[in-house]
Image (cartoon, rainbow, N blue to C red):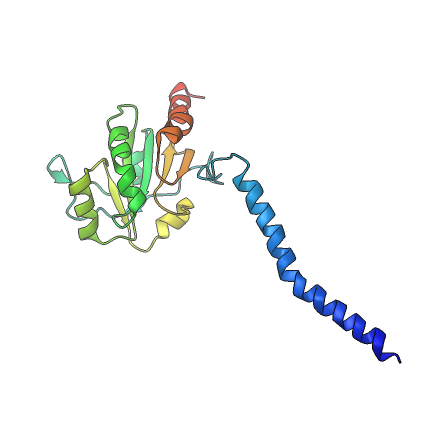
Length: 198
């Protein structure tokens, strides 16, 4: 006679166990939807490095790259010291990097800052071809074949850009390619603020 309540208890336990994945999925979906629906720009990922000194740079040059008919300088601390600098992490295999390159070229013409690049997990020949075909916006390029420098800089995915103050402090970070909105609402205000000294 006691087998009936035990069976009912087991059946209820199995139903609860069967519904558990559905409940977890529904909770996660609600969280993700609320993030997407918040209106926040998900490419503006906060970085623990903003407001801190930039990681040290000691990257070898992109062999074969030139700047004004001279070998392209390596990306070192000395290359960015004392200058407002945009550090752009890029690769030839990165489709958004190709789309972003005209914007980076335009930024390189801005006399208020210099633009340097970290070539991430790329083949030298492909990186050189990228710069020859699309234009070279960089005053220095360092190669990061294993991604170690990218880890130090907290790179999520490329393209990614960091605005570094003349004293080496990271002022701004952009994950993903620049567009008109990210320039007008993100980078340009950060440049103006840096030049104003605040």
